[in-house]
Image 1 (spheres, rainbow, N blue to C red):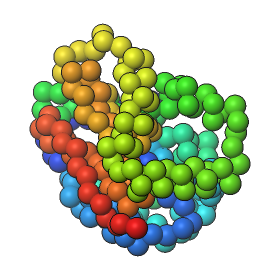
Image 2 (image 1 turned 180 degrees about the horizontal axis):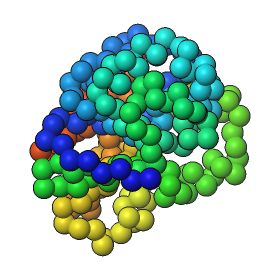
Image 3 (image 1 turned 45 degrees about the vertical axis):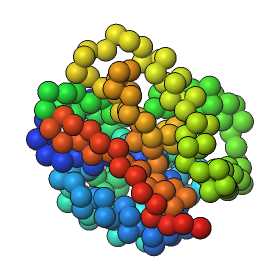
Image 4 (image 1 turned 135 degrees about the horizontal axis):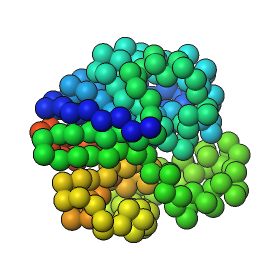
Length: 229
């Protein structure tokens, strides 16, 4: 499904929060703050982590305090790979007005095609699908990612993950209209590469908050630490 709507408003896009039954007040406050920053919100996948909890556990968790705020912002919910459509039900309407695999936003003179990124079937995704990792592996990966970011810093973290961004760029190709840009999440690697019509909003995890702001065709990457370990 592709929904198209034109806005001259401030749009907040975030992805890959991977919310679970483990509540983090600092993360909650950061998400609340950026929701309030925009006129509309787009969640670009992996809002909650269906490999760790089920949907009913998620909507019953303390994270539900975000739902009225999101609903008030006419939130569009783009499914990801951890929160794929088959793992949820109609109660997604508690926090979003529209649920879709792809959303097209017209802002100013530019068109933004917003998807999570898993549809492109990256090499990493194929490996994960074959292994079908149990919940324990998800916790191990989370610990490893957190440790890598804290020990080596953001620059190394981005360098390590940028290979996945480059793989996406090779898949979307060069035959894109001049004023059309793809916006993804999924890779946990924030990047704006307008020359290649590629944008990634990063993630909100491990104390680091990344998101995008779009206003009248102009896009900005935002980032700050909301917690330090």
